[in-house]
Image (cartoon, rainbow, N blue to C red):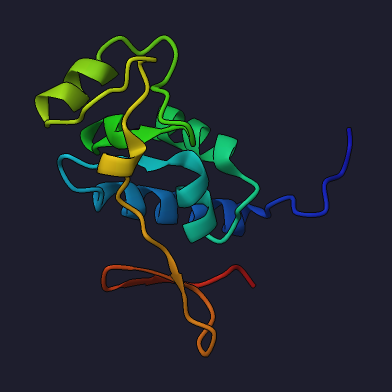
Amino acid sequence: MKDYPDKMSPEQARAFRDAVLNIVAQIPRGCVTTYGDIATLAGWPSHSRMVGRTLRYTPGAENLPCHRVVNKSGRTAPGWSRQRPLLESEGIHFKPNGHVDMTRHQWIHMQRNSLEGGWYINDFHFSQRE
């Protein structure tokens, strides 16, 4: 098995999961964000696929607004037929190619704080991993 330099320890995996769930819980109605933005905010920018796995396999995640998470081009999750109707019911607009209009609905506008290190969304601070 290949050993990746940024492989997570069990403690890091738990912290990542908790950060992902916290971030997703904050996505407001009528907005979407991407797996990559969530991974970056959680301190693991190259782990966007792990965000999807976290949302799929964490018990209780179905109670979060997971339908508001899309890929970087605004494509909804393949095989999840309920995602688009849920988004449309919140006023999300789709382009002719079937992707979410990210210019109208993308929620995260990240700002880097160079003094403290970390990312900010609204009033929430997410530190970079140690």
